[in-house]
Amino acid sequence: MKISESNFHCSVFDYKKFKNSNLPEFVFAGKSNVGKSTLINTLVNKKKLAQISKSPGKTKTLNFYLINKKFYFVDLPGYGYAEVSEELRKKWKTMIENYLKNSKNIKIIFILIDIRRGLDNLDLELINFCNYYNFRIIIIFTKCDKISKSKINEQVKKIIEQLNNDKIKIIPFSSKTKLNKIIILKLIENAINKSNNNNLQEKN
Ligand code: GDP
Image (tube, rainbow, N blue to C red; front, side, top):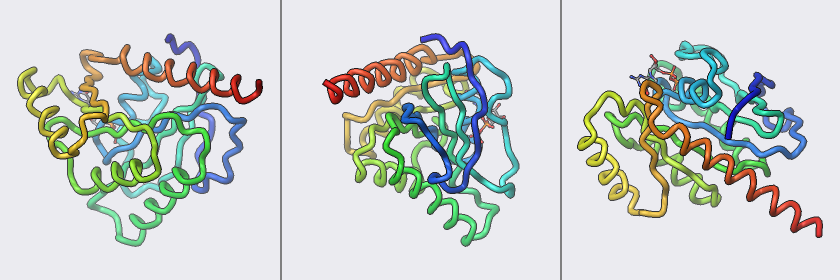
């Protein structure tokens, strides 16, 4: 799939304020600094669609980007800032959970993990939440250009053991080498086609 058009659509704190006309949503989640903005920018071939390295104290919102006028990329605020108060952290958590529970259009939640750091409790909490609500999740290991191929394989094995689940797809990615960019776009395309087919079947 080629992304020919991508535009910032809106930022909301409360998902109910977002008027989606039932277009599919693809969500990107992960801790701050994991490379979320960079991944979105790489997928859409733009340098600054998603803002890179936002400062942690700023107000966090759900950011929607309209892609090819057909679907949305949704940038979730990076969880796990050490610098913010417990109260603010709770607010963000509630905002994210309300969104995930209320949207009917989420097709895939991409959970980004820095390959050098691996999983921690905050990532696991999100993964468990997504599994509980039956979301399709895909784990993206970011910054794979920073370690060797054998170390990448080691980290993939480790996470499969930690998750105790070999059904979750794990994709190593690098914005520098564009490793697996095409595969991620293909997964998005397939999910859109599947959703279109389901909609057609429902209508017939
Ligand atoms: P976010 O907070 O998750 O949105 O993270 P950013 O996209 O702002 O990235 C944080 C930092 O990591 C920036 O300096 C990026 O240039 C860098 N970065 C992100 N992805 C990669 C990658 O795949 N390879 C390398 N080498 N650096 C990356």
